[in-house]
Length: 461
Image (cartoon, rainbow, N blue to C red):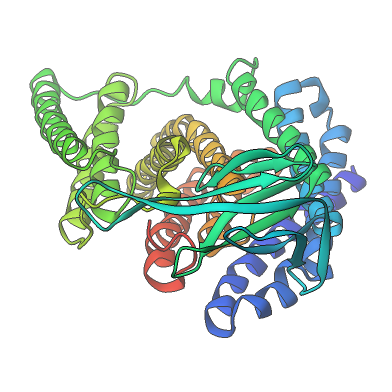
């Protein structure tokens, strides 16, 4: 029992320290630059050690508690350990840098991120470079390099979201010369780290799916919660209003989608309208099981529409080349579904704190949990789909960009609420609801704070 207690506080303490260091790192990066943030935080021995302690103590505690008897739950956590192990392997053995070629030039050399000259086991020749544009505009839709590999004298195309994989190396379109006669490629050589990390992603996805079918899971227990319904006239009015709002938002999204040629996945206006639309879907799906969702949903949908109306982003603007990927819709949809559900949990938390009787608070806590499990899993799925997309587009599945970092912080902060067996405070309804309200601040920082204050590669979102 004493060992379990030590392991519990060790895993909780180290995880909390990791979250605080990540939050601090994003601020330091904004104030003092990326190099300082990586040197003192992301690549520091302390940061790496804290992750290791969190993983080891957490798995050890699960084994001692017999969690291995719940395969989905156990392998869900093992998947995170594999992902962390893959990241460590990438840090220790992976190589990355850039390669510059002029049209007609042949070379086998590239520069590492540290500035060292590296040699490829083959040669590349830049045959051609061109820019594709959206019809009748000067907006680039893609950057395309034609290269020839000396080993087989075969021509390959490297463009945004279309990489060249050859001989254990990966080449990504990064930049180009103003005269369109030169091209810059990102180069990555990390076969082991990527393989281990992707194995973790696959196990994670399968475990999350299996979790919903696992007997006596926290999700199944929470589903037993029921809330008091409204009178029939009130239910009818709420349903009609919901249908009208759903129809209006569907029209707006459809119109903008038709005019722009892409879905509502980029820009504050489009994403907030999408979030409002998702709220109406959630209200329709949950209205019988969780009637309280309907009035709270109108509040959240109204807030989303208000933010959209204050936005200056153009829903019909052409997409940047890097965003022309099938991963865009899946990634953004997963993230926005999770944010929508987190918003509903926060609003339920407000109601939970207003209510005085413990029975109602407990019922509302169970209601929140039934929403929270899919919300955390959707956020996790969206985050790691984004990582795969980043690996395809930028050559690095995790670069500690502020948006990535705060998405991970949000995931860890909300995941804590699912561990009431380890952190008993979450079994107390009042604390649970207060935490749910405070946790929503991480969502607001992830979407609004990063976009408008911290910047980074995702500042266009």
